[in-house]
Image 1 (cartoon, helix red, strand yellow):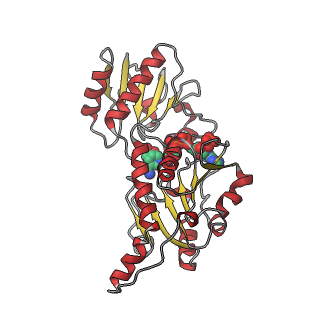
Image 2: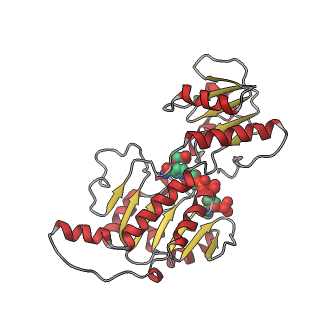
Image 3: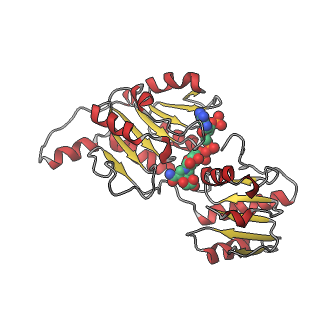
Amino acid sequence: MEIIFYHPTFDTPYWIAELSKKLPGARIRGWERGDNAPADYALVWHPPVEMLQGRALKAVFALGAGVDSILSKLKANPEMLPLSIPLFRLEDTGMGIQMQEYAVSQVLHWFRRFDDYQALQRESTWQPLADYTHDEFTIGIMGAGVLGSKVAESLLAWGFPVRVWSRSRKSWPQVTSFAGDAELGEFLRGTRVLINLLPNTAETVGIINASLLEQLQDNSYVLNLARGVHVVENDLLAALDSGKLKAAMLDVFSREPLPKESPLWLHPRVTMTPHVAAVTRPQEAIAYIAQTITQLERGETPSGQVDRVRGY
Ligand SMILES: NC(=O)C1=CN([C@@H]2O[C@H](COP(=O)(O)OP(=O)(O)OC[C@H]3O[C@@H](n4cnc5c(N)ncnc54)[C@H](OP(=O)(O)O)[C@@H]3O)[C@@H](O)[C@H]2O)C=CC1
Ligand SMILES: O=CC(=O)O
């Protein structure tokens, strides 16, 4: 079995060595321009078109959870990967716990009013504030997939009321599920902390805009863990400045790296991280890919296949 690997920043020799341990019969090589030799599987992130085009592959693996970049490249170059070749993505593989850590730590930060205390500290003001109650801190998670479900679980454990919004309805203990566009308004009206874990698709791009933010409770919070293009950044800034939003924590941006001139950098109620909410953990990802290839070779149907028509 021949496997080709391409990632613009990962340590290719390390990945090849570790994957070889899990798939001892496979010949694995880093792909370089001009390499047209046969391959059965391709492991990729932001692949050049010529890497995939015209190859009789059995499957392609995206080395992350989101497949928006490869799907948008495919839209422009459909010949790069015919629909008959399945595309897999990483399902959790260690990202769930990272998203839980991120979401829980930030929600607790807001819930315990550390943002307010930090502002008071800057004024050398000693001022105990009224506590928030869990009842007034309903968490609304947009996207109830692999990562949204993990985040929901962790915030429930901390006693927060949790609701989710997705395309299909969920029946999860203690979680209120809202489904489809018709129920988005009701979902938003009861939400105090909006957490975004949607995929980037034609339906979700720009979804966190002025009209959506207006439907949230006053003094709400936004935590964007998914993709920058979900948020209309000027609308978010306007909602912060009007007082509709109390604060926002952003891991992802419409342009990355965030340009130096973006007003988000210096806004006193915006905090940010540079797209690190959940990174690909090599050992977990390699174990998943090796297991999935083994299942495919046996003719089984592994999970993690992207529905390219649906877009996630
Ligand atoms: N910042 C970071 O470091 C990282 C960001 N990400 C981002 O997180 C995203 C989510 O990952 P993951 O949980 O694995 O994805 P999943 O595909 O497992 O879940 C997607 C969820 O979104 C819902 N959804 C999709 N389209 C719509 C829509 N139009 N309306 C309502 N709900 C919709 C789906 O609904 P249904 O259940 O009905 O299908 C599903 O619940 C990734 O696509 C990626 O962009 C991922 C990893 C790291
Ligand atoms: O943003 C990262 C991903 O895996 O998707």
